[in-house]
Structure formats: C-alpha cells, structure tokens
Image (cartoon, rainbow, N blue to C red; front, side, top):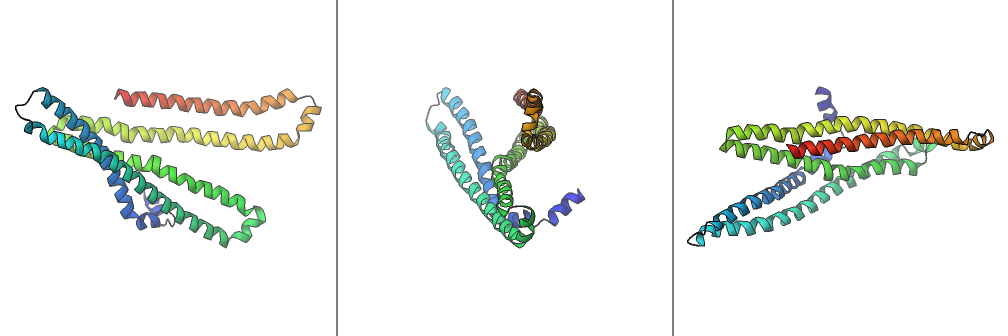
Length: 258
C-alpha cells in the first residue's frame, strides 16, 4: 500500500491531468449516476403507477404525481445519458491530447538516442497506440465501474435505512458482483493475457527466423515439421482463449444466478 501511494505521489503522467480536469471528472460520474438512477426511478414509479391505477382511484389526482414523475424520469434518462456520453468523451479526449503532447515532447528530447536503434516513427506508433487504449480503458472500464460502485453504495444505504436485514443481504450479494467478481476476473484473465503475449512474442520471433531459413526446411524435406512447429503456439493461444470464454460464461451465469 505504501509503494502504491508512493507511485501515485511521484506520478507525472496521470495524476496531474486528473487534478487538472477533476471538475469535469466529477461531472461525468454524477451524470452517469443520474442516468442509472433515472432508469431505476422510472421503473419503480411505473410499477407504482400501474398498481395504483389498477385500484381504480376515485379521482385522477391520486395518480397525477406518479404520471408527472413518469414523464420526468422518462425524459431525464436519455438526456442524462446523452450529456454523460458527451462529457465523458470530452474528458477523455482532453486527457489523451495532453498525453500525446507530453509524449511527443519527451520523445523529441531523446530523438537522437532513439534513432540509433529504432526508427522514430515505429516508437511513436507504438506509444501512440498505447495512449489510444486509454480512451477505451476509461470509457468502457473505469467510468462504468466507478458508477456501479456509487449505485452500490446508494442502493445499500437506501434499502438499509428501510430494512437493515435486506440491506445487509444486498451489501453481500452486490459486493460479490461489483467487487469480488471484477477482482477475480482481473486475476484470472491477467495470467492468461500474460501467457498469451509471451506465446505470441515467441511465435513471431521464431517465425521470423524460420521464414528466413525456409529454403533449408524445404531442401531437407522437413516441410511437415515446419508446419507443425507453427501450429503448436496457435493451438496454445486458442486453448487460452477457450478457457477465457468458459470463465466469462460461468461468471455471467453466477452473476445472473445471484
């Protein structure tokens, strides 16, 4: 934990920009929370409205407020969703823009040393590709995860204030879904991803050497051995991906069961 805090304390890439755009980040999380809150409130209010209308109240005044709330939540949900998408993309693009600017300035200072061993374009393409993954990381992983945690806390506190037993049950079940399952996924899939990258790296390295000596393989009559040698890492990668699909299936089944 100390090393983790020390890493972020000395970080000069991520933390400065998180502080710079913290207001926009808070707005993104708030809009995402309000999107799901509006959807949940619309579902609850619609159920209440249907049940009250089925009782045939003596006056429409009794169901007037739920009717107005149904319209309000029905309009609010897509509006919050649209604004949240715009704001989140705006935040991510600002971060990526600053990252690229700092990246190019850093590479420019060491351009002479880099050009001795590599082409500058190759290095920039690799680093820029890594930065592009930041957009998907935040939009598809970080933001939904944080918004899910906010909803988790809100639901547990709200239900716990009405019934503490049900609140504790939701604390346990939703905690498994929002905390334990993601950690298990990271731990399990992380090992498989690491093995897959290792196999791919060795495969490309060996393939390059073997293609350069393809004539020797053909002259010696070992074409079949050459093909079998290439199929082995491909089968290993396919097996790892198959295990990953099985894990995802069982994870989704367990979540739906809960």
